Image (cartoon, rainbow, N blue to C red; front, side):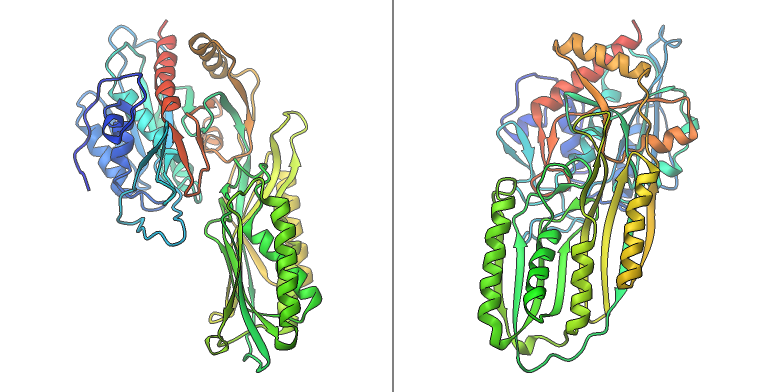
Length: 505
């Protein structure tokens, strides 16, 4: 692992064609560097320490690190511009860690493997890239390091645990900063600025199960769903990609209606904030109806393929025989029925669309992980609820409560985060959109979005803050197909520098 802090590079507008060329750009030199330092959620200490060491080398800057490993950096204004309003830039240090099945990658130790695919930076489909929000960190570091133009006081906040429970943002001492205008760099669309975001929370559901010894007349199959696009549970929830857990639940429900099946295992997804890309279940089928079961599964596969193939071109299904001597326990027919009923009734996807802003989701839920562990005697799911309104978030929880009343189990709400209300009269919005129009000669859309951003926490503590979120084009966040546009990132850096310049005019 490289430990040297990269030096500032000479900016070139030509799109780099190799990683070596990419490393010459002031933003990407930092991004490639931080990709070498593991920074999973709750394990950001090493990266936080490395950036803190870098910041402390600049004698004129003020910097400190809190107990959550949040970082606070202040760069004084260029002499003569001390009276100009300060600007605060913010990004989060942690990343979602997802690997493609079969790829061996230790997110606690291994640097990310990077690849160039045209004008995009990826991992070659191996793992998540961490552009969410490593590129925001890199942009802020490059801005701090830039000495090519005069500037007001520039402040930077790097937070931790954004992808899990927002505990970094919740603990951040926002009163330390002088700025009244905050630019969050955690957006994934260059031509769209975010002016508000949803609030939400996680739901942990668990149901104790009582396994029994397998019967003698059962034939076992492992059925699986794979190759789905997945994506971000907020950013991509409306794109019609579907959830592997949902598809599997439909296959199980169809089987259960026709045949007295018994579950011997189930797993799906990896993280509540990522739409599930894979799911599988081990099923015990009465031997005399095996042929009928296989025909039924083929029928379901054809139906689901027709529904979802357009959004999931690599969608596939598997049916693998499992030897009976490998099965130590199963659920009873009755218990299997109850569990499948829960899965099919469990809310998933878009609940409501925003009636004021076309195309924006208002309320959704994503169950990103499900697991049946017969050794522990426990069935669990992890879900993320998002909404612009607390009242609609409550409705989703009421649906879970009703399922529990009917089918048993219990749930716990965690990682609650506030929404960020949209303010049409925002001054930072006016500054950013006008600057964008001047630089790129086209309009910058500016609307609220259906994702959780940290601005809501900062506004709870500092209602006077005026916030906006921007960032370069990126896609398939929270999945191994994550990509980052190189030219968009280069443009975003120049755009941010122009915003800074506008403040001192």
